[in-house]
Amino acid sequence: MSQETIFTKIINREIPADIIYEDDLALAFKDINPQAPFHALIIPKQAIATINDVTEENSHLVGHLYVVAAKLAKQLNFSDDGYRVVMNCNEHGGQTVYHIHLHMLAGKEMGWPPYQNTKKVAL
Image (cartoon, rainbow, N blue to C red; front, top):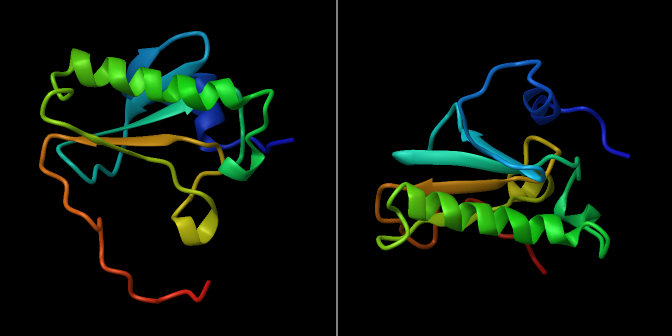
């Protein structure tokens, strides 16, 4: 069971967001702290806390988020130049809201790696 998050409040229209896409399964809105000229978050309407909580029964929602990203890229003319989608998981992965979401970044050339690691983790 997931706890209510800021994303739940956006889905329920309890707090405002700059919504750019919505269907029965997903919602997309502009990030309030953009890391690229275009930065949106694409979320499932069903709360799933982390990637670790994705199951066979709800895995179709993750695929749907990518379908939405592709639709947005085409509509906003990013599909040919390219864009990045990222899903973070838990604290070390950079997740700050525990409701899975894709970050969609576009409008500039993306480098790789996206940033320099400051701490190496032994595997």
